[in-house]
Length: 171
Image 1 (tube, rainbow, N blue to C red):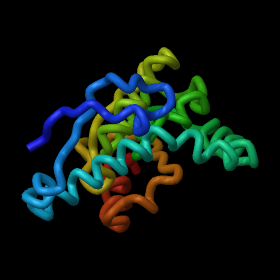
Image 2: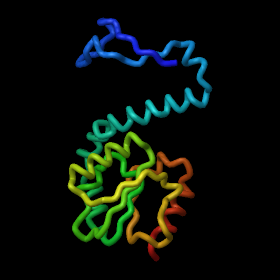
Image 3: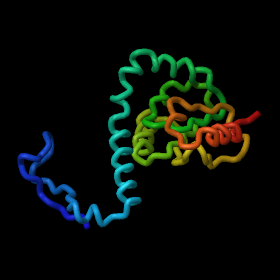
Image 4: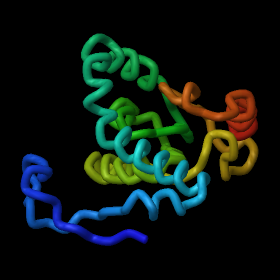
């Protein structure tokens, strides 16, 4: 059972009103949750934090050459393009005019929300879907190009994800 409690002024974070209601769960209510539920809550919190901080975490690598690598890699993309694990949309501005259609998948809801905002901000006509790389919701031979940048290290079943990419790519 979760109750709302006002934090003590000494606990209030900078930029937050000390009078705002914040969720408070007692240790007993946390212990009463199943281990699966506790694990899901922890994963959800990690996913939200990761999505919130990803662009800042990778900023140094982007400046050190990763951005230039993305631009070179994606400049030659053409036709119908599938990008798996689109994250926060860092690749969006790298696609050139030869891309007829862009479909981007992202399995994690917090990243998906950031990706959708990035697509909107870039005035892109990209189609965004929630889908894991291991189970792509597309017909065989649907795309000319498949893009995966900094994704496969976070995929549970990499061989399956690669088989899925091969399946949806045109010969």
